[in-house]
Amino acid sequence: MALPINLGNCKVGSNLKTKVATHSAVLLKRKWLSHKSFEIMISSPPGFQFEPGQRVGLSMGGHTRDYSIVSAPQEAELIFCIRSVAGGKLSTLLSVADMGAPVSVYGPHGYFTFRSTTRSAVFVATGTGIAPFCSMTRSGISNFTLLHGVRRQEDLYYANQFQQNAHEYVPCLTAADPLPQKAFKGKVTAYLERHLPSGAYDFYLCGRQEMIRDATLLIDERFPDSLVYTEIFY
Image 1 (tube, one colour):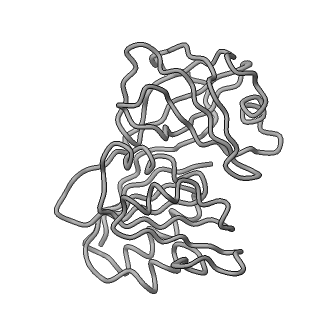
Image 2: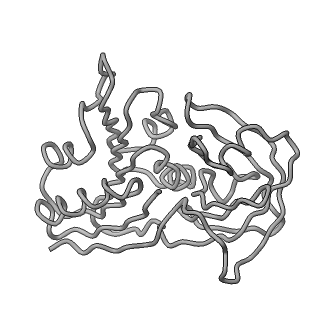
């Protein structure tokens, strides 16, 4: 039986009732990655430290939400991949705010960090759940298998980065026509079920709750000697 390890939730709304470190930053850059997702860069507060895979609370205009960090600890700024949500108050603010606008940073927090073992690592992400794996890769982690589940090719954020560092990078597309080279037609769970060789792995799952539920059940059945680390994006 695979051992599931729930490492907490990501990108959830937060009222920050517990005491956490508070930092001040400013918005430096914004770049649209697709029609629905964008990347922001903010200044790194003095003395701010984190581990690849961790997340922080970002706050602007009285609205706070958790986001995983895309950049690596050694980089000079903090980078985030943000999905523009219809009616989402913070994502809307961040998508139009002027450069230099103040941003409050709470944290870091979370335990979705890489653990080096003798087992091969399999990273599984849906949508912007790719963010913590970007931070891990940019910090020097390599030779993993990565499955990124999205609808279309334009949603394969940071594909070039993973192509250079992964042992195997598999885009899993559900609405692409025609299908890009070396991509899989279907969900990440379908790829796990049909194509990943049997064995014991360290699975890192980050994305929608439904994917994590289905993948964990499948891993328990097909890869019972594996470990499963999870981070849910809402």
